[in-house]
Length: 226
Image (cartoon, rainbow, N blue to C red; front, side, top):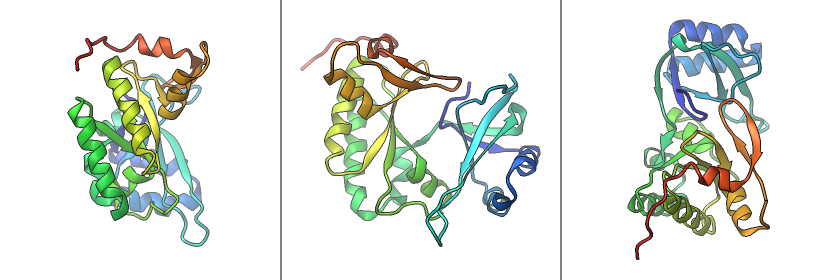
């Protein structure tokens, strides 16, 4: 089953579908993408998407002249996907980030690993690592995916991200076992806020406001130890 932020590599027919639906001003950049062997990213499904289709997107590099960004979205058939992986692990992006971020991200990755979690990245950091193109600026965020399986991992992961956000421009989401995702900053604020505070979740098929307790119910309970 596909999930948001999955990476997909297309067949020749898939690229033909992309080219046929892309705006003319994006076709040269998409041809370079195809020739580079780079993946598309799975995005939230559109209304009317057929059962045998998946929605994908390409976030093209910022334009040199004005810094503007173009995102191209389209749909392909599942048979147009020849390979799929989950989002890029953080450890696979470390060589692509600016030197001033590297030590902090290495420590974040190590601490997350020690709690049994792997962190992934998406957005500009992932695209810079995957394509080698110019995406990162001094104003870029580091979009991370925290993917806990237990309540203990979730709370430890939120604490880690919050602490490291004091020295790194961290953003991103918590992805729960059922595929729903929520901004980790929004979730942390909800835990600290008034009872009944809802958070905005994003899934492959829909977005919804839910209570954090509904998301917590998808996680395993662990016995806390010192």
